[in-house]
Length: 214
Image (cartoon, rainbow, N blue to C red; front, side, top):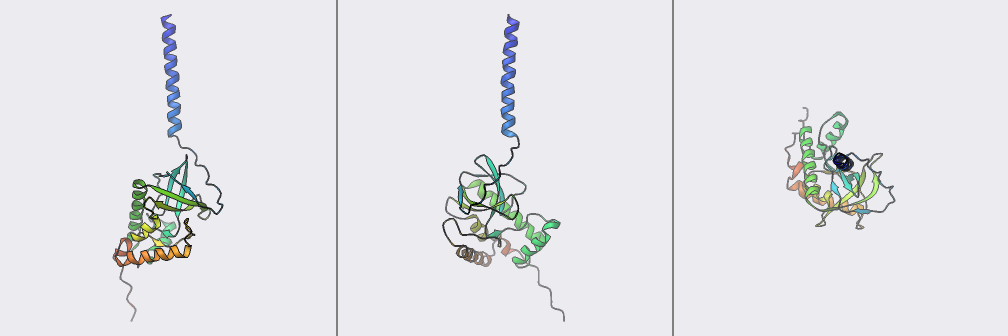
């Protein structure tokens, strides 16, 4: 009788251990990311999202988790320098270097790394709301978005103020109804201030222009 009771108790222990292991596996396993909803032209607000640590994150593009799914977003209006150099982006790096007055490629990459850290710090430490219309970035999994913080500030504005991006990509009418042209002009004003104050990339020493041939 004691042997049967002992076996029964061990069986229940094994059952509970198995249930616990299955639950732990389900929690930590890689789950497929649901596709982004089809765009319909209207902004939707994603509240209580959080940044996902991902190797593809940079200053203007990052992965977030929201409502049980994960999405890769890309900011409207701004373009941060690449965070590393490889053959497929060398042309883009040269364009970015030229935009800031002629930085070297290593300088441009260093600004990209700084922009990535800047964005990650903000998204990890401050509350934010994402506004997106699920408009796809070309033919990719990324969707354009606007990011607003609790104080009303916009992530694109913060990057421009810090001198960590160029104003160069697709724009949009803002979720509050502000016209694309007006918001871009607003960013241009912030950029002039950052340039005058030599913030971020604007403060990097520039290569001397080539001397004209005699």
